[in-house]
Length: 101
Image (cartoon, rainbow, N blue to C red; front, side, top):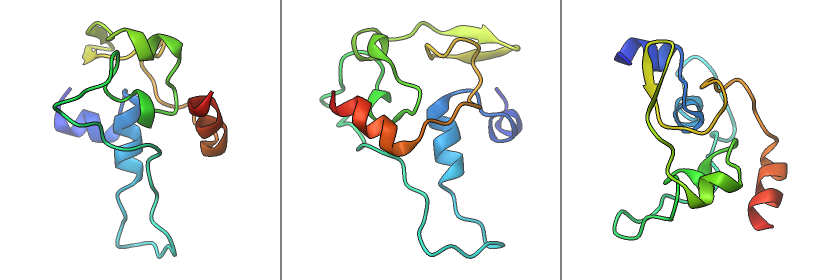
């Protein structure tokens, strides 16, 4: 999508997390928002989706398969999320527990 569309209506869960982690000058916070997991090495990408360990919507399929590019609302998306929206937010503690299993 266009830069404006990506920032206004992010479709990929990791894009939503990145945008949510950007601090604003209009709000004071004691702690910045973080994204779970760590950035994978480009020389040693995980099997499946490269964002699997940092995504709140990851599932078993994400660990073994790379999602195909598909078009959702006239925009390209490479994600197994059913409808290409990122409105679902899993509790970080729950995500960490699932990732450890």
